[in-house]
Picture 1: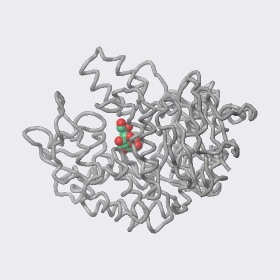
Picture 2: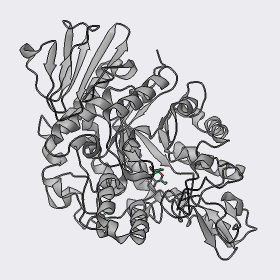
Picture 3: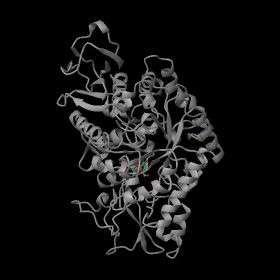
Picture 4: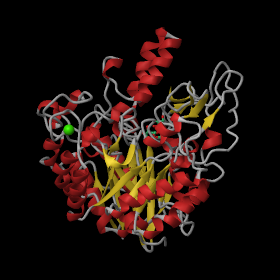
Length: 561
Ligand code: TEU
Ligand code: CA
């Protein structure tokens, strides 16, 4: 059996502070606002809170562009507020995980300002600076947020690298001073008593030193340089150094956000005894509904692909490393709109997906509002959107082809990051109870039907269902440590699997469709001795048969004793 660890037994809740709760009416969520909702989170039963960045930032990318790693964003509050928040979290026996964004800084960070000021500055080498090539950028890499990954600096006649926005210059981890500055920052927060880090695109920090051109794409000026900056040559060296110098000195929860990694790589990052990270956020399952040209290229999700992907990760890391489990976050569309049905079967499919996530092996991450079944949003025009990735893509595409408007908007409706960033829906009152002022981004118009106030008092709500799922994790060791095995691999509507721990077994039956497929009890599993642990429809025990029709998006979990 895998080693027991508190971070395997925990459930994490992600807060995107800007959109969580505004305490002072400026329309922007803040630390005091979070403080007001800690009892709500305790009621839900989560163990760890992950805070998206709260550091000083010009907010080009909502805090993922940091201008000072050791102070709090003015809009969010003060260091004193932070310390109080941490204390209040610990008082409730919960833990706090901070976002660590160290692949890049803001261009307004002092290091970058000094680096830009002079080629001789000791800070110049904190970043990637290169002269142009044949009157153009040093290479053809495309930024994740559209356009070139290089920005020209007139004063020095050189370019700097930015894999994300031009206000997010990449740090040069080859420079030992950069690494020690990062480690010092980590210690600064750890000494305040925080309990872990979520590390932003941490598998991007080691680049192939020659920064070679990416293979060109037909008709395109730029191409993804991912092969030269993802999982680069020194990545394991850097993480092991970080672990040795910092992480190993504390009892922490760590998760590395790692786009584009395979199970084989994840074994190296999370392997027990390798002294790197506890777990990673991999992207395979959130790439299944994208075509070859990337996330905006919409493709219908196939259940067979979802099963194959999750099964590969579940079996691949079994006994070796550990999985993180998520179906949405601040960068992804809302889970119920994407994998479920946010219309007729909203309630059922949100609960079914929650059942799925919480019964896989790994540490589950709940993104704010997921526990209420919050959905995607469709704002009528681009003017309502705030996300830099969305706006850059829109501007690029619209300049190529104005006729394309409705297709572009459809991509945004399906995949835009603002789907996840509309304000948390606390009540049916003005602005969903998020703010007494004007929210920085519009509230989803469905807040009168979907909100916390109503779900807290409704026994059958999604919130209550999440609460029960979290309790089951605390009551049954098998939910955390049981091994996973897929059954019915070929079924096109049902996703069923077992979990096994010693003599115990769980059977998880999920209908991923709005149809009513028949489920036949597998011969190898005993039918007589079973106990229903949780389900999203009420089941009349006497009606149970060895073969039964599932209702749309039905979910059942049996414990076989
Ligand atoms: O995201 C990294 C990342 O590559 C993607 O998830 C990306 O944001 C985009 O959605 C891909 O289509 C992390 C953060 O989670 C994200 O919010 C930041 O914008 C990004 O890094 C830069 O810090
Ligand atoms: Ca505020």
